[in-house]
Image 1 (cartoon, rainbow, N blue to C red):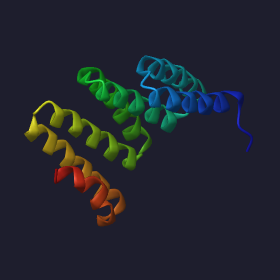
Image 2: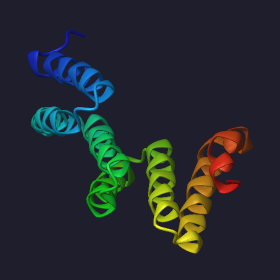
Image 3: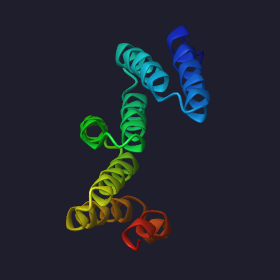
Length: 138
């Protein structure tokens, strides 16, 4: 199967974003992610759309803009649920837990970490506990 121009462009935009993130140029990263998002919406790349929304959420989380991060995580979660990507759901739930942890809302953080762990176990079994369960034990 041959990649389309849009698919290749999305990959290149992602690569550019990785470099800008390493340089701490977060506004540029978000702009590149928004361009990626438009491409993935256009070509129907739902899993890539979810991943990009997660990436934008993570950039905002690292900048301490938790409300914006939660918004993008919620959008990604909706997509992952729609397409049945349980691994993606688990990652997003854990990321939401990280935000509540940073906000000092520990009961809420534990709730999301537990949801992430349950989702991971349902999908992958207990072999994933070290990856997701580590966050619960922090």
